[in-house]
Image 1 (cartoon, rainbow, N blue to C red):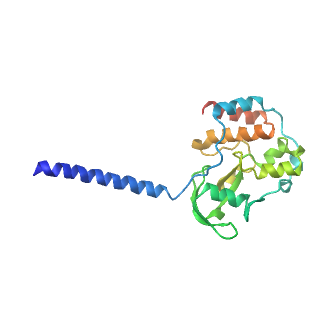
Image 2: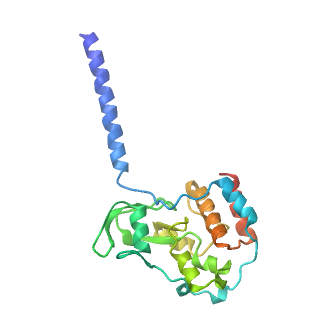
Image 3: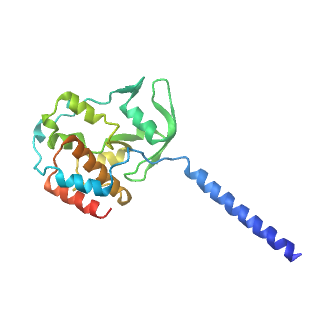
Length: 215
């Protein structure tokens, strides 16, 4: 009898393991981490950073958030915020006005999860005030609008309101997301600044270099 039971027990054990694996997979399928456009590689980011102008920030006193028009209509009734929420979540359901009424979101800045989109912000990875101090003060309104609603570069991402408020308008020398996301964050930051011709200050460059060298 033992010769018959042993294979059956092995089969039962294997089946049980499969059920556990499937259960874990399904449990993790309900949430999704933010999925901003994939930033350039660390090597490319290091190359970009080497060519970005290093300069002290300026014009801080003249910054006004309204100088960067957002959120604009992207398609139909969907504006930029709603578009990013739909992109960065899983199982997202929207109403006739394109507002997210249900779904699952995970903030890569601090690993906070939610099923309530109103508890998440859309972060400008390079903050609007930071961009202003780094050269956007000289842009046209149309250029600032394009920057504030850029879905092509890794500039917009859905994150927890608490992490976004903690970050404020700080650069990587004084604020960073959780360690597991810092490499992606630095690569994205450099790509955006490089593309828009924005400068970096010395402390910012030093922090970015340190992160990228460890990627």
